[in-house]
Structures are given as C-alpha cells and as structure tokens.
Image (cartoon, rainbow, N blue to C red; front, side, top):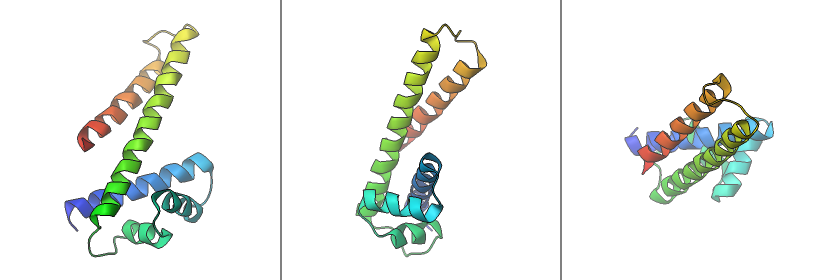
Length: 116
C-alpha cells in the first residue's frame, strides 16, 4: 500500500469515526452519511477501511483530503469558541481545562499544516 493509499485510508476512517462519535450511530450508518457527503458509494469507504482496493483514485483522495481538512477547521472553530467562553467566564489560562483546549487547538492546527 502506497503512502497516498494509506493517507486516504486514514482520512476515510477518521471521517467515519468522527461522524459516529458526533451522531452516536453505528459505524455502518456513519459510513453512509460520510459517503453521501463525499458522493461515493459506502462500499468504497468500507473497502478503504479494510485495505482493499488497488489504489485510490485521485478524485477520491482529493475529496477525502478536503473533507478531512474541513472537519479539522470546524473543530478549530469549536475549540476557539470554547476557549473564548472559558476566558470570558473568568477561567485562568493556566487552568487545566483551558490548557487542554489549547493543546487540542495546537494539534488540529498541526494536522492542517501537515496537509498543506
């Protein structure tokens, strides 16, 4: 499996896992939702997750990467809002909860920088 295939597999799995966690549905339902968003068949995502296939197509890799970056951008926006709210209610930047938010923000930003 090439590096591009591995990245596509990772992005597809992460998108499915995030959808599953966000909506609280089984993996098969989350896969259908992600597949619909990407305009691909659920079987395509399942094949990626199981490591089947003979190389991801360029258009699929582009869609997966774009969707993954969008997901990270939404997470950054959510965490930024959460941090602002914590500071507005008087939390100190040295408190564990604020530090945790900042660590998650840094990780998400780092992932986006890796993809750019």
